[in-house]
Length: 371
Ligand SMILES: Cc1cc2nc3c(=O)[nH]c(=O)nc-3n(C[C@H](O)[C@H](O)[C@H](O)COP(=O)(O)OP(=O)(O)OC[C@H]3O[C@@H](n4cnc5c(N)ncnc54)[C@H](O)[C@@H]3O)c2cc1C
Image (tube, rainbow, N blue to C red):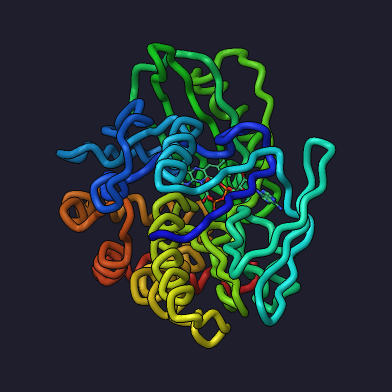
């Protein structure tokens, strides 16, 4: 857009370390014109597993999503940015961000150097960290998922498996995701949970071992947070927040890549307009939040509502829901309404089916009654 842009990344290499499963819907590539070079596999077959062990198989006609090599994905974005004229400085950690009447100033450290940068505006895109946003009055997300994931070199020929149940992933789900990268087979194993994700992860691994899916593999793991509710304000004087830094991930799955990129595009357009018009006040940049809310607001609200309801359910109630889905053949009904990135329509559709709604309400009632 003709502006001078500096990207500051604290790590030495773009895209490392990887804290992601790399599942990205097809729409991200078609609607944003992303290079497909980072796609290594497709998500074609999924098996959903109830706490009881009952399974629902989902084999959509089209691949549900792509599996990307997240390092290659980030590097392809960096190449696009450089080709468009941006300067990228790695090993450069922003340690302070101040806004003034005439611009923003950043203190940057790395590689034994210290740098002072002045700019007309700044975009905070530092993932799930909220120090700068809090100091600028933008708040921090009020809801998170805790996530633990590891990747193991092993081959598995079957489908991706998604496990539900309080012992495995309290209030959320665990995944077993086979992926083939440069001819080598791997499996990503992880959980998202509303609490105690490390304990849940160890129980999940033990569960997989018991069922012969992991055989004696040593499992090292790291844990992260995914915000599932946006900041109170994603804009301030001369500043915008984007991606996890703004809390723009899907409350259902915790996927944040596509929504973050959609918001990044809106942020770039809003800032470009503000830079040309000399209008970078908080009031002018509020247009960013209005626009991204227009695109994502309904999705995020519906998905958060659904997550909050489902995460209250006991294993017994989840088993009942699975039963309803199986016996009402709801997956076939939902098939042409399901979109990997947009869940509002499918959630409202499924939640308004009488047997599903009844099972959901009974589960909710039980969760409110004393044990
Ligand atoms: C285990 C796990 C699995 C996931 N799987 C998926 C998935 O399959 N699909 C999906 O869509 N999403 C997934 N997500 C979510 C997804 O990874 C995030 O939503 C996405 O990475 C957010 O992108 P971002 O650019 O906002 O932040 P990040 O990817 O976190 O990037 C922020 C960058 O800024 C750098 N940084 C931070 N602070 C500073 C600073 N002060 N100075 C300089 N640099 C700084 C960080 O080091 C980092 O490199 C997953 C998350 C986790 C934890």
